[in-house]
Amino acid sequence: MNFEQVQYMNKVYLLIGGNMGNRQENLQKAIALIRQRIGEVQQASSIYETAAWGKTDQPSFLNQALLLYTAMEPLPLLKEILAVELQMGRERIEKNGPRTIDIDIIFYNDAIIDEPGLIVPHPAMAQRRFVLTPMAELSPQLLHPVLKRTMQQLLEECTDPLPVHTFN
Image (cartoon, helix red, strand yellow):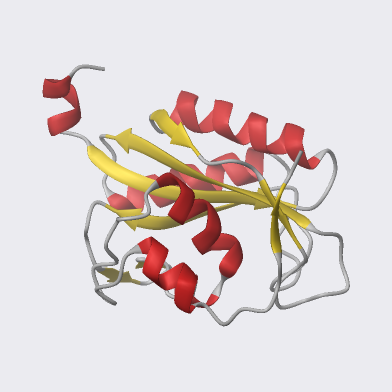
């Protein structure tokens, strides 16, 4: 992709994660499907492992932040993300329950979006170390358009007690 093409594309940060099946393989499959259906992944953070957040009686999650460019507008992007999750066997049985894959839109350009079913930036990201750690690795100086803090600042201020470790 050359500079002229990137100029007309939307810059999107996603967080992918899961805690069922072969977690690492599921992340790789999600990236392949995102490339196929949504847009080229430009950067990926390290893979991080953390205990489940919210509903703690389940296996640990692997999470990874992605930077990609897409021509898609926000709602069609969400529709494709949900289709990828469904294709990978995601079932929405219980809130914060175990899942093969979860794909969240963290940022869409520097837009502030509040639509039914879609809030961007992700509303709980500043309270979740498992989101901030890979985001700070990818783009430490990226400014949150609502909180006016960088990813690094938000990570340093985060009170989430769950440890986040690089996965080997």
